[in-house]
Image 1 (cartoon, each protein chain N blue to C red):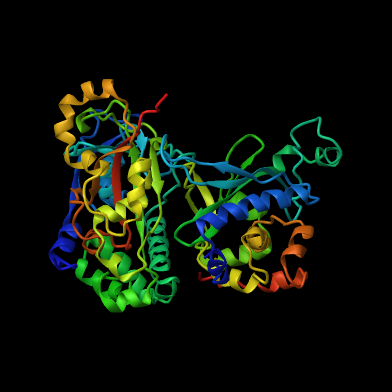
Image 2: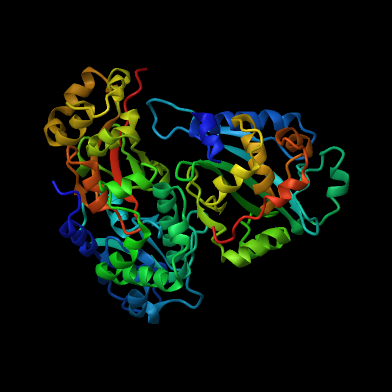
Length: 230
Length: 341
């Protein structure tokens, strides 16, 4: 049943949990400066049958102006960070933006959905203009063409706060193209290698190569032709 | 029972909440303060669409600044993308008429609410919901995406103006229903778009009159999950069965064994919550002291202001009580089970 749904590019809620656990484990083994993904369990009702409901969270990813992507997990606001902090700390704090990313399962689209929000050094939330300046050119093009139906400002399904969301309408279509090796365990790595690009979040290459049959990362780029109208 | 009732749909479209809208005192700069505005808010409409009518009443008293309009009910900021009728059903356990809301033109609470700078964000939120519904029903959004600009505009304008005929005319081309017609069931995914709002009441609430106001959205769970119907027999499921599939937590372990029955009959805990609310109201205190409740108890299920009979066909409820973006919005009031400890 699970494999069936992966073949059409979608993912069941149970498989999402499997995929999420797998992403957490794989991510930990990868050599990345980004923080780890963690599974946040969520219970809607104080008592009752608990299923594996929850979401994935990657918080405090720092974006430094003039860099093209999110590079560092080292907290540039803290002095005692080792290694990288020496170079990072020289950047004026006013241009450092911190982003949080959540991957939430959509029962409507039967796909993961990426939610994100960001804040400045002083805790002020980033507005649309700030975020646009941080986004890679690729996303800006999509946004211009889709008039913000590609990235929308929506209520976070669990936190009840406004977060940005990458619209999942076309996910199944390109996941179908992407899944050379259909398994729930690899699903989120493949998915994130595409979706992450839209927000400058790069999946460590050691992870993606194991998830694609041909091991070529250039093919990922070609699959990114998401219909902007979706 | 006919699964489609034009009369029922018309009643939904004509449904409105009498609103009494006050300007927040911090934004009153003149004496005497402006009187509240009385206005009918269509159930299927959205609060920001009322702003063009409300604004002239308060324009002269507003402090200088740029408008960023939002509403609150007893201090709770209202989510503008939830239809007005749903907000009313969810937040007023006992219907309050007129419904007293407060409007703010300044000081938008950005941490809680997405900003709404006029009609456009409401329209896009609506179109996105429509796309989501189409995806659930057909497995893709093509019909909505391929809509002409003119159709899209007509669709939105007829919703905003409450013109059911012109809405239905355009909407029927999207092939998103009604359910129960063979042609539709064959081509779609067997999934039905639902937005369910679960309001968790305090453990000591027996009567809806005792329900306190919602002071935070944290006490409301928002469950955005389709009902799935995969075989022919399921086409005749009752509203009860659909609710059971959405909220299996409302049954303890013994009762949940019944969930395997395709079309469950008989009365379980869910009935006690719904139909015997009044009967249990008075003697509840004594029973509670004897044995703590083991089961989450539903106090009320409300759709379009109606306490829906759980035994009527689910397709009737969806076809006739859904909102124009093809989602059925269901408000559920529940009392959680007491912990055995």
